[in-house]
Length: 185
Image 1 (cartoon, rainbow, N blue to C red):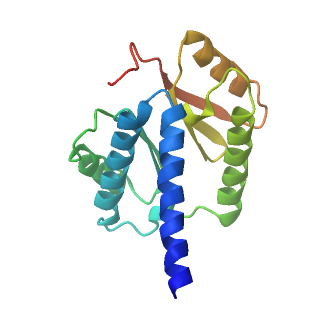
Image 2: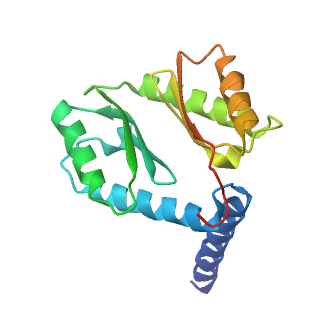
């Protein structure tokens, strides 16, 4: 029992350490990374209270108060309700709604999307000139959605051209900001 409690405490410390490490290497910095994580947590709490049958089909990405929704919902009404509830969360500045209306997404399609997302993330991780800690990727029906920050215009162009050259992406949507100044926003 004591060993299990010790392991739980250790895993929490590792999680916090990993968050701080990633936030420290991100252009957002620790303060904005924490703020985005807080906003995402609040959004997930709000939409989990809605009557949505398969919330696992919805993905939420946050970058400096910009929210990107991807995935599937059952109806236009649910899609609108999610957006209305999101605006209630303090810190939300902009919402990009890429939710598709589909009530029956196959396991095969979800698996294909997961594999493609993993490929894209891995390729970005090992591509020189791109800070992959600044970027979130999601894939829905073979379409790649990328949100995040670039340190400068060259990095933004590099990300977009690198991903555009990938033949396994049906459609690419990038929401990549170049902050005017990154320190202590």
